Length: 211
Figure 1 (cartoon, rainbow, N blue to C red):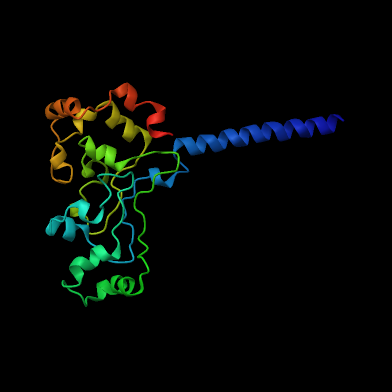
Figure 2 (figure 1 turned 60 degrees about the vertical axis):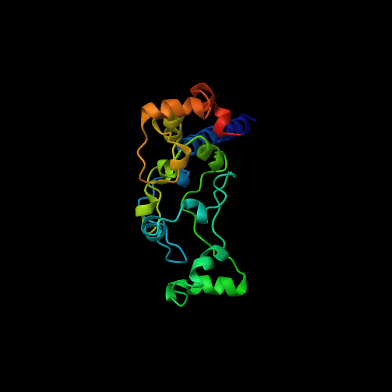
């Protein structure tokens, strides 16, 4: 009987310690790869250069990420978007072989995610765009990246720093997609009132990001 009780106690406390260790790892961010800063670019099936398209040619983010102003997810461009230009621009380029195949077969291109927040984090692109938060605040100078990478770690601290002092990051809505724009905190304070940005106590509530 004593031996059985000892095994039960050992199993119980071992389980408690195991669960505690798991929670510590998860909530410290160690186990969440999406939190990590990815200084290396993420390879893609098609050699698409943001530096060329967004930087050199000046294409707006909205042209490819069409849902960014009205949806939580910014969206990825369907093949039709690519072929709008590439039916006429370098249509036989070997770099576009997979795009042409997708166009002919109807099979979508399987792009690799660069930023992938964990399931317990809620983020809505349209809400941030509407309040004057520029793409570059999170994604960096995409217009200078031949291949996109994640320029910073999306930790809880990163989000809370912005939510506690949003005026330091706000810009006029017409400048949201301007990668080179430098926010002015004084203007940001006025925009905070104009765009009805929620106060810090609401922005830092747990339910704002964890729903």
